[in-house]
Image 1 (spheres, one colour):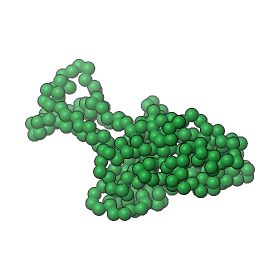
Image 2 (tube, rainbow, N blue to C red; image 1 turned 90 degrees about the horizontal axis):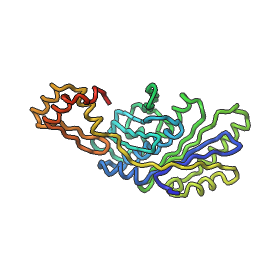
Image 3 (cartoon, rainbow, N blue to C red; image 1 turned 180 degrees about the vertical axis):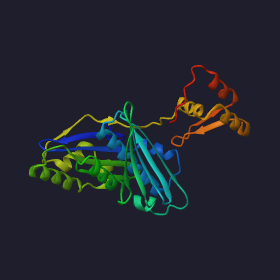
Image 4 (cartoon, rainbow, N blue to C red; image 1 turned 30 degrees about the vertical axis):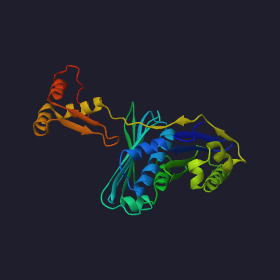
Length: 290
């Protein structure tokens, strides 16, 4: 079994505790290869990428789950998204000298973290929490505490270009004293995890190191990959929504209508004939804004 670009679920038997481990290498590197990010942003973007993979698996949404942090600091945006198929992508925006910001709060300043769930069928959901806590993990723990009302703990880390994450969540239970003790015991053991272990130790060995006195049931893991969801069809849908007159004005000024994906840097270019056929085609997509 691969130990990289993989997510692994587990349950501690006879205990109301479930968990996940994720480790991203090639998929994280592909995100970094698209842009020249400062080290401080690489770290936070890697943690966000690991976190969105963990949340997508535990929420079990049939659609897209995204994390978006917006702040007033040198870094104004961090965003990552994932789907149940294991596709990941992420992006950051910043200006000026980032310096040596060691935490999410130092990097972004005052701001908000938005969790968005867009199911294939059903209503869009958004949860918003402030970036008042120092790390992304602590902000997400606050979110679960407020929305799910289930005790949840996360550990996120970037070491040697590997983004990793470990998550524990209490299963719904009667919250007896025994349940509470089991949860606290699982968390206290997870607190002993070292960054190097999260980044490199084989999953089964890692779980054995933590919970060798417990019965841990490990489920079949799932591979993860960098995969952008942009497409020519989606760009065309967006162009139709702008209207033919506005697009023709752009053609006159620039000679072509261009749209560049911010995630993967793919450039889509349309000349006058392309725009004409887009609106003359009876099967052209109806206006849809993405």
